[in-house]
Image (cartoon, rainbow, N blue to C red; front, side, top):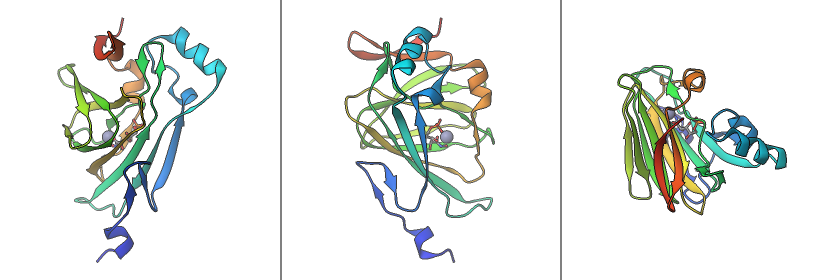
Length: 187
Ligand code: PAN
Ligand code: ZN
């Protein structure tokens, strides 16, 4: 039997913190090359390097059938017309799916099917669960005015592959158009 502290964890839906989780923080400069408007990015990066998001990963066990989970907290803001977002990734084990559970704030997920190239924008909000199928690049976007917090649950074997998607980038951007989040093909 696992240790009790691996069986039960405590998280704070407002801050997205899980007690005992390994926390990774990503700042603006870590997302160089992700945003569509390079000029707006460089102007913002010259002015500072704010925290964009933090993710606490909880890894109770690493066996074949095990699960890992993480809580994310993504700040509100924009670079030009493009909302603050996560780097985004594919799972190293491409078939690994993931479940996202919205806790607070207003977000969307950008999903890109690796096999068909199809992109989709899906709301990520409290009381909503987003199923990210395998073989799908995924990125979280804060389209609201408050921090966005969420949980993600994925196979322990999934692994995170950032390079594959960074090389060619997501095909679509989530931009504010007429006050609303809109998915637009990268030019
Ligand atoms: C999430 C992500 C989290 C941060 O827990 O890791 O949203 O995004 P990046 O990992 O793209 O920086 C998840 O999808 N785990 O698999
Ligand atoms: Zn993932």
